[in-house]
Image (cartoon, rainbow, N blue to C red):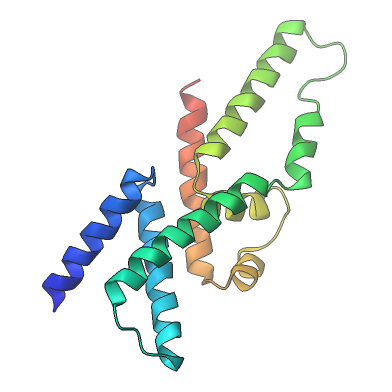
Length: 161
């Protein structure tokens, strides 16, 4: 039984990897697909669970893509209008600040949609970990891990510039 599950997990990861998903993104989509299968089975019989899971992970990824393409918090747009230097600063300082902001934005775009959303809710919108957890239906620990993951990634990202 476990061997069959492991083979199925490998198939699903390979499918999602071929669609450009990272291992973490694939694992999140697979977890969501298994949850949907479990919920669906409460009321109905599923004749082909593997086919159901394949179709569901494809749908989860498609939903994620649609959500990613339209989700942009207003406060993030406002960040672009913030001044990173005092009036009368040297032009080089202004250009450097603009470059760092563009780099930060590019780094944010590299995060998974879920990690980016949690990070922005916490750091830009000012939500507490508990508020984010309640809003997203996850544990506080999961939120803390996502924020830490984003901070670590963005710190390393910005150090490379």
